Image 1 (cartoon, rainbow, N blue to C red):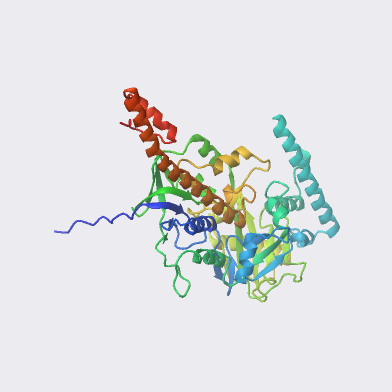
Image 2: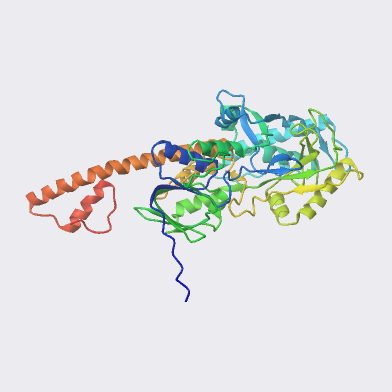
Length: 493
């Protein structure tokens, strides 16, 4: 007769659980540990840390599938991520997108004259700014403004519109990142990858082996959180492998895409205001497709790194970059897709994508170019642990929406780049949001500890009052206990 299967002993209750080991989750956990909360438990769904920061070797070099740039350099303040880069000696190079508008190819392989391209770009910028002002006025007066004359129509207009809105103006102007940290952007081109910064951060408070591998039991990989049960006293987390974890507080550091999905259920359900905030924030899908060639056939030079393909379909293999400035002799091209095109490509085979990209390249550079020997297509949209690349707030500021997405639900606290008031969508936004959220949790812990000291004194005072007055009805006593800030389900005798 087979012996009954053993039920694993549940781990002891933690002071705090952090769900997600990306930059925000790790920065939050680090703050808690540094403030003496040593029993923090970090649950990560995948088999690695870093979240949407992830490198992969391709064509003999390290390429960034997700975040790849330090955005915001050269300003009055030092970007905290740039500070980490400097301390780590991570190799980077400046990305200058300004010349891309002068390298716009049509479907016959001709480059639009620089004067025409420049004028079209400047006109598009003026139109975008004017539209934004009109939208702001419309929001204030609750009217809808539609101006068909500003809609891009020609392939070049569509290409410039794509570059302008999907790359250069992805958020409300003025952009806080550029105001605070500077307008320059540096691409990470280090074989250790952008994720080296994440490992460095984790190593500052989690124990690791001599080769740098994290061995700390407080970090649990391959723990897919499927259910979060929450009450006035605790939070319980149920993972896909059947494990159950309990804590006083929970910091939820998953993407806005995951919050929109059905990966994690809440018992009881999140309140309507929180669900609405999650619904109202859009997501951006950003796909960098890498193609390796036997030799380079594209123009080279300091002003040729980026080039644009003008097509009748907006965003169809529009934005290209060669990797020669980053890795000389690598013979790698990168083409970036977003949103609808990203989702479409993620749902087809890599071979179909390679054929589409090759036809675009043949349009630009002729039919005799070499075939790509390999292709790499990241899939952030269909990855159930990500479901997006970053959050995409409305162009018109909505402070109520931001407060709702930041707001805790009982003992559940939310963090990540999507909760950053000034830096949503950026790596430094994720990092700083984790720090801010941890500080809020620490403040709540302090209040609860103070209340724990006050409650016995209040109970003693009420008991003495009871003796003097001849006794309070136990239901009235229960009402009195509401003054402590705690909601008791049973009367206090």
